[in-house]
Image (tube, rainbow over all chains, first blue to last red):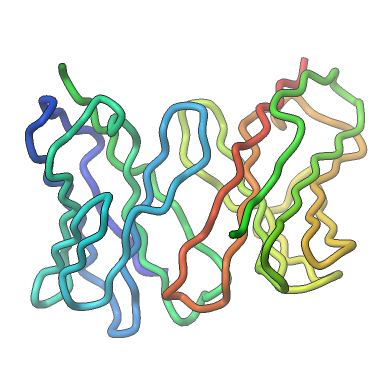
Length: 111
Length: 113
């Protein structure tokens, strides 16, 4: 599976936007970029995914670089409930059956 | 709508005792099913996945086994627990398409004493 690189931790203030970066320089043309988040003592929760174009949903936006070697998850207005570990994952055609989670980014939201 | 159930939520077991964790999915058919484990302060490790009844793939050698006796039932077992089996066990379901997300249960926190 193609690897992703994320900062170990980030901090944000409540009601401010948060940009969580992810590098995936070895991404292949058929790899989808998935984002999940895990709140304390819970299972991971799907956030968003995309292939080439930027994507928006009720939870977040996903901005994908033109060369697809990096992406950014955007939380438009952080709340305390957004404090979680955020995982950026590439789901490749060669391993359809599984997702491989890295260490993710621990997001702290300050009141 | 689809739902995934895992139980129990917490479990404390002595070393050497057996283990059985159950996961069921409702509202869908022929899902791919997964067992992940998260040790304290660490990332998620894929243990097993299944694409159909009786079909189990193991990702890492370990003291655990998995079975899928029915389409929407996935069981994680051990004959004799080790201290190193402690962790947060998560069941998930998904579709074969790499365009579709995984949906996780609420997990079982297992402490082996």
